[in-house]
Amino acid sequence: MNPFGFDLRTIHSSSEKTMSYPTQSDEIALLDGITRKDLEVTDKLLEQSRDIIWSDLSSEYDAEHFSDFLSQSGLPFTPEFEAFKTGWRRDELNHYLGFRQIYSILYDKSPNSIDQAMAAHQPNFAPIQEFLEDEFRICVLIAYDELATTRTYAQDIALYKSFGSMPLANWIKFVTKDRGLNKIRNYITCGLAV
Ligand SMILES: [Fe+2]
Image 1 (cartoon, rainbow, N blue to C red):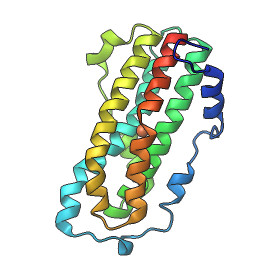
Image 2: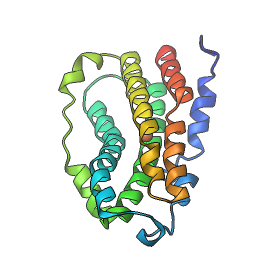
Image 3: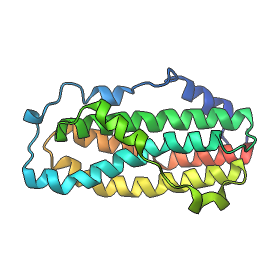
Image 4: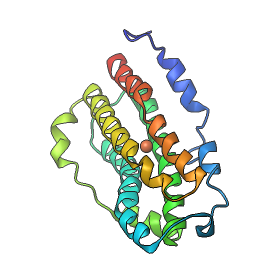
């Protein structure tokens, strides 16, 4: 047990529930079967939303890039941190898959073409290099990113509601909640425990 009262084994075992990586969460299944005909969209709304949804997609997929970056960094990581990172990466991938589905529906792009665009993107992690010295700092950095993204998604709820689809509205609410303070607390806890 750590100073925050969490048992890391609980955190990690709860991550194991959806471990078959890559995987999809039940929440993504709520988006199954939705087509453009089910939505209330105009060309203007689609154009206004494109960059926002693409940004949501990209921020989730950046976890893939960041995980690869950490793996190639040469930094020594404990098994506990590796387990934490695996769970975090899986959560982010699930979020990405949901946003990818929404983008695919709205803009008639194949999931494969979206994947290719994301994989081709080369994020620059140099500006945050000074925070990547040890596991605790990396956990705090991830927590900060989660907090910032949570605030952004909370602001985007109205946009997703405007598409006139309850599953889309529920999706953004789920992702906002899934990135909530509870998870951030777990990240910090991980940093203190390793
Ligand atoms: Fe996420």
